[in-house]
Amino acid sequence: MRSTPGTRRRTAVFGSAGALVAATLIAGAVAAPTANARADVARSGKDRETRGAVLAAQRAAKAGIDWRDCPADWGLEKPIQCGWVTVPLDYAKPDGKKIKIAVDRIGSTGTKDERQGALVYNPGGPGGSGMRFPRRVTTKSKLWEKTSKAYDFVGFDPRGVGHSAPISCVDPQEFVKAPKLDPIPDSEADKRAQRKLAAEYADGCQERSGDMLPHMTTPNTARDLDVIRAALGEKKLNFLGVSYGTYLGAVYSTLYPTHVRRMIFDSVVNPRTDKIWYEVNLDQDVAFEKRLIDWMQWVAKNDSAFHLGDTYTEVRAQWEKLRATAKKQPLNGVVGPAELQSYFQNAPYYDSYWVEIATNWSKYVAGDPKPLIEAASPDLSDTAGNIASENGNAVYTAVECADAKWPRSWKKWDRDNTRIHKTSPFMTWGNAWMNLPCATWSSKQQRPIEVGTHKGLPKTLIMQSTRDAATPYPGAVELHKRLKGSRLVTEKDAGSHGITNLTNPCLNTRVDAYLLTGKVDASDVTCDPHATPKP
Image (tube, rainbow, N blue to C red):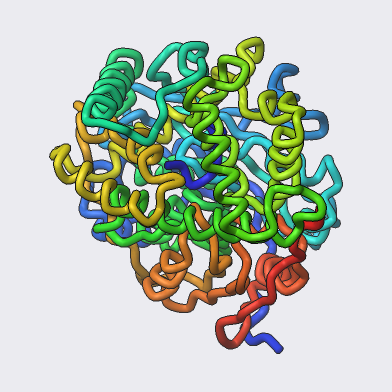
């Protein structure tokens, strides 16, 4: 399942030492020096693709970006500007078919002397758009006030996403229709039905987007990111990646260590090659169960507000009752167990949803079902939103299926998910069906890159909460081990996904210090959790 919520409400995610490294970057800087490019070639093991990426970056540095007002229907207000960066579909064939990557930016708000270049953002997914990142300035987010004085905020739609040669696997209106099959199977027949749907979805991806699928990989998106860096006129990249964006950043830092200036990893995907992507998803199932329990315990503590039970056992029983009711007869003919799961899973993702979901649930139990039904139902009139949801799911599937070899044996999927479901029933089977298209994927599947430190990589900053459901804590520990000189900042006893955009001074001051000065603490840091929501 996605590491940031998106489609199916899985719509994708954060006393010091160190030298001052705040050199101002020069506009119009060209791509990386030749010696560094040669080192990158040797490291990647894919000479043709790496040479193609170097050539694409050189061309982008020369072309720059023709910044203009954003199209009206993109929802990006002035002074945000939009543009395009051209990249090869296949980096092994840099003179072959090209695609255009949509980018946007807002200029730094400080003085010329304060400016340190561009800060590029990816929110996760795979399949998430970063195009709303510059709105942190136009909406006057206090958390980013200091950083926005020093950096242009730059977002982009990764290849296949949104405005960047978007891919599709099924008609968007069909994709969002409800109710869907109950993800928890009662019989072998139920499993066969889900397997059939997954295979049909994989076939649909091939039919609708087959020419893009072999090239929808994280390494290719990392190469695109380097071309964007060059087009921006930046000698080195400043990057904030959340959720899947941390894996994108980890692959970039492995391929292009000498191109990194500042890099923050927020809520980390475990980069181990044996984890990407099948095992990562199994780990999520266990973590989601733990975080769901955290939320239900909070609901029980606040029984005076929600009246859903004053113990976890009672609240869980209410959930099972609701689920059984919707299974017997979908609420309003639309909201069945799948739709409830998709809505309720927002609580384990983000505690900012805790009050809303508990309130709607409470109203349902008290006899007012409308708020819960509306929140959990698809909106068939929102055609643009449905196109975005289907596209996000298509990219999620395409990238994860292309990045790594997936088990082809249904017996393995059945055995593993049956085992995990016994102790983690909330997400396990739903997650399995979402990923099962990878078992019959007809397009080429790669081997993941071995993420690690190479010469020239500067200090990096890793931010992670201990009870994160979508990207469990061991992933951050693993990346920390692999990136020498990295500093791990842990938000203890918290579980929101994507913590750099939360109010917690212990986190916020370290993000600012790193981005503004390059400084990190002398050792790893543990922060108290941000404030728990109040009903």
